[in-house]
View 1 (cartoon, helix red, strand yellow):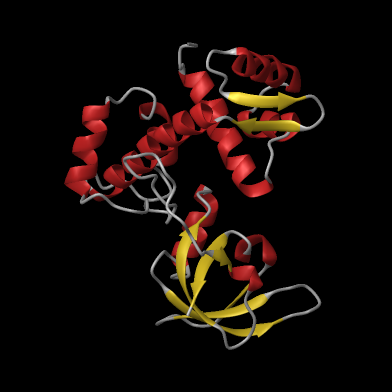
View 2 (cartoon, one colour):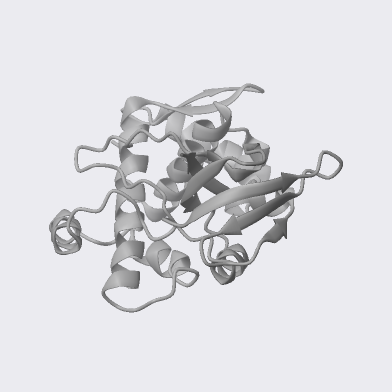
Length: 221
């Protein structure tokens, strides 16, 4: 069996993320997220497809999907990452916009015992500080009914469930009170530019563009 290095785990995480959003991961999209050349991506996915057991299914010009073994490996690393982010915020006082890189460094090296202890200390959380679901201990992803804030229209109420973990975005929405758990109501929608006027509890109404509302995910009430 191929040794699960940090690089391989990063590839599997990216493939999982892309296939969850788009059904399949293209080499171009993977190269963009990983910051490597497309040729390097092709070489790695061929290696992962040829491993025993195979970790991906690769069809030229049709993209990449994970096998069951590849998905389990990806979910294990994602569980490590999201538990670590939660621990860094709750136990060590990190801000939610300053945990991603630290968790990326640690996710590949912690033991399963350390993971278990972190989860227990945190009370086995179901979501990380950004609201992303944490895979369960048996490595299944909890179901989610979250939808982008951009899909809401006037007079709909919702609660924020998660925010895409981009540091500048996290700082921006935190200043607006649009953090996980926050209640909001849509006051207006512009058909011309798709801007939404949002009013969060105890906050003044604010106009948000699609670049922001498409990165905030909510549960409609």
